[in-house]
Length: 257
Ligand code: BJW
Ligand code: ZN
Image (tube, rainbow, N blue to C red; front, side, top):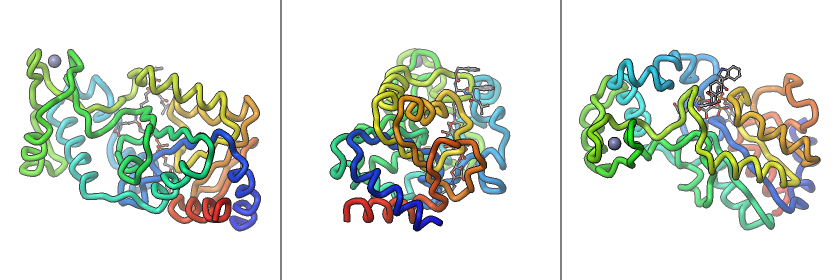
């Protein structure tokens, strides 16, 4: 079944002129970074996002929220890109044009060698002031404090050198707008591509989830890669069932090898 789907998709990939790759937490799962909604292991299976991933949660309990994000930032520093990240980085030199859009807050695409990655939901490594948005400059101090304290527990956030307000994680929480330039670039690319490859996302978080629909509506070919079966949510797309770290290298090798 997968063999058949890969066989079917490899010429489509080989002929693509503008490829958009749209990734979610599943692309980093094989690097040991938990997804959000996988049963038992997903972050939102273990924690209520309303306690950790909203502006109101940070206002209510900044130490809880900051400590949780710092432990995730530290965990990320010990992880490595997996074969899916590497296959996508290699793809950039095989197709005439590639736009990589991610919902992920990790930097594993960049560490695999991808450039110009559009981060729709921000970035764990870029804390900023919660009031004036000034980037937090003392990153090395942060690493020391976090290494000493963070175990997923509470940590008082540092304060902004400009306005003395608490520093917050550089990610997009529920109820917040996505970075305008990133959002615009992502929708423009989806509106112009001829192939969209969606990898490891549940496709439930708006407005990002509209990106494959925009591509499909303007006539692009859409391929989803996910270990879960397609339950009919994407009737217009081709589904390749399997892990990104296995399917992507195979698909790229079949198309260009
Ligand atoms: C593998 C694999 C392997 C596993 N290989 N695959 C009611 C209706 C509609 C919309 C709303 C609503 N109420 C509120 C909203 C808006 C809200 C929203 O969409 N909510 C829905 C969940 C209901 N959206 C927002 O608030 C956004 N802002 C916004 O809309 O502003 C305007 C507005 C505000 C309020 C109301 C209305 C309008 C902001 C969204 C910000 C999302 N932030 C997070 C957290 C980031 C920080 C952090 O890291 O903590 O972003 S939530 C989380 O979900 C994270 C992710 O980027 C995002 C998407 O998740 P993703 O990547 O798809 O992961 P999973 O876990 O869901 O899926 C993983 C997939 O991988 C699975 O399918 C697995 O099978 C697969 N997989 N192993 C390949 N090896
Ligand atoms: Zn400030």
